[in-house]
Amino acid sequence: MFDELTKEDIAKMEAEIEHRKLVVRKEALEDVKEARAQGDLSENFEYKAAKQFKNQNESRIRYLEKMIKTAKIIDSKVEDGVVGMNCAVDVYFVDDDITDTYTIVTTVRGNSLKNLISKESPLGSSIFGRKVGDKVNVKVNDSINYDVIIKAIRYDDSAKDLDLRKF
Image (cartoon, rainbow, N blue to C red):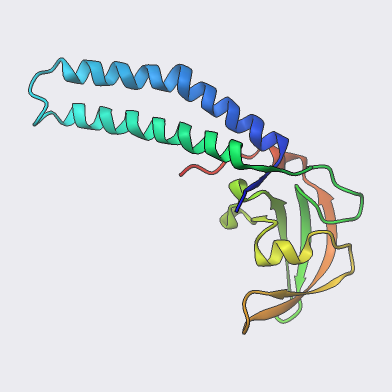
């Protein structure tokens, strides 16, 4: 399965890769070099920690490069009055009689603690492309579903500036 990413997501990933290659990699190699100079490597905690940090940085670079290589580019432009990428949506939960606001983002920027939901999530996929006033049935699985009503839609310009999720 390919991750859906916007051009902004790709640009952020490329910037992180460049930073990791030019800055973090250099620092990590210096740390390993300094720790190696301290002597016995078998009991040298600093050396092990420096190597681990260097390996984590290289792993993150490979991960980001693979994400970019295999990504499906999606358009972040939205049509007025329609739920799309980077839209903040006021959703009324019929059964609970409450309204919450969620912002639709790509998978790599999803963060349910901040009400940032991906368009692949059950709620995100159900409301994506819908309009104010639409009553939507959200199917979580074969036995769980619930109804929501879209109350308001706003383009959330700050959503595209969010940090990408770290692993």
